Length: 73
Image (cartoon, rainbow, N blue to C red; front, side, top):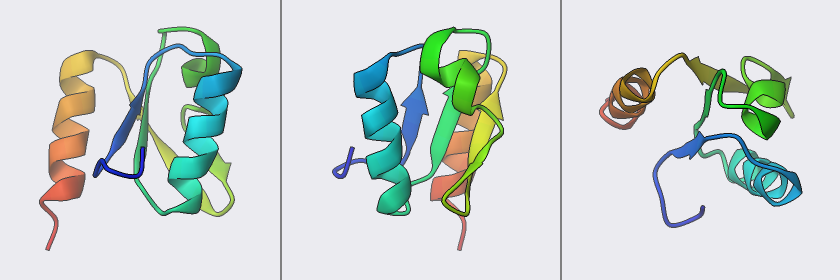
């Protein structure tokens, strides 16, 4: 999580939830793939600790959001 620029969440359980929390604590953008189930559906669109979890409706959209977030100047 800390080595990446963005975290994309697909489904997941307790371990994934822990990774989401870690990413948000270190101000890494988090993108949840809505409809994939588990933690992704729970956190999609939420504001957690003052940080928004972005929502993607498809894998392609998740990549587009990630690209946009990492190329901002």
